[in-house]
Image 1 (cartoon, rainbow, N blue to C red):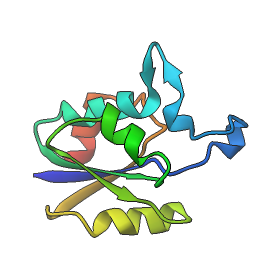
Image 2 (tube, rainbow, N blue to C red):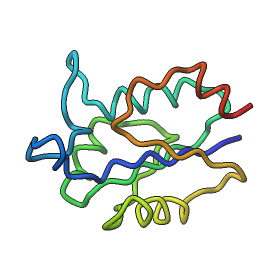
Image 3 (cartoon, rainbow, N blue to C red):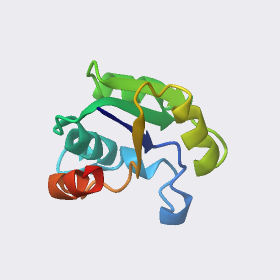
Length: 114
């Protein structure tokens, strides 16, 4: 089985949103919701760890409800956020994905695992 760490503790500063781009809605769903669904649909992934900010933790927990999902407060950098996520991993193999990249395909996830 596989774990995936999805980083979602950014500020959206490059997009000039004033908030985390993962919370931006596309077709009625937040970007992070679209991203997580792709990984939830894979039978080989039994653990999803989402790095987030303390300010956004409540929103994430309300929107992303699944027994496979764990949350952790990310760090100041993507590297430190991934490190915080790694502390919760229970599987031997781990994928790392940027939560704002919601257009990943199931086929690509399978290819990466294989």
